[in-house]
Length: 177
Image (cartoon, rainbow, N blue to C red; front, side):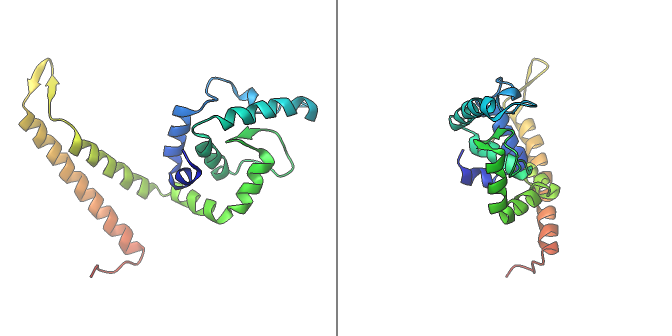
């Protein structure tokens, strides 16, 4: 996952990608967090190991993006590594990308948009799913399954159209030319 890709994904998708593909899964949080009263000399090699682990992770950019959106990291506190960055590095990146992150967080909180995305995804899955079914050990007629799918696809399409129209009206869109 690239940084550009991560920046355009919603929080739920980012979290799912990180949960599914993180190299650090199973290593334990202690490997990435400084212990209480741990000296700089003790923390430095563990931090380096954590940074190396992150450098090999295929979802490092997604993890970094989540950390930035969550507001993690402080300029004067080197207490953890996340997404291949230390706390102060995350704080600096968050400051440098404040406008973009505010927009990303606002998009993450757009539950109507998330619902719209979920409905479109469900419609796509239904439209591309085979009609071959077995219920209670008996083969179901593909025509009956197709009819059920079509009914659900029509209902989803109507919900999607209504939601889009309402969102566009709220955003000040006029009637399309």
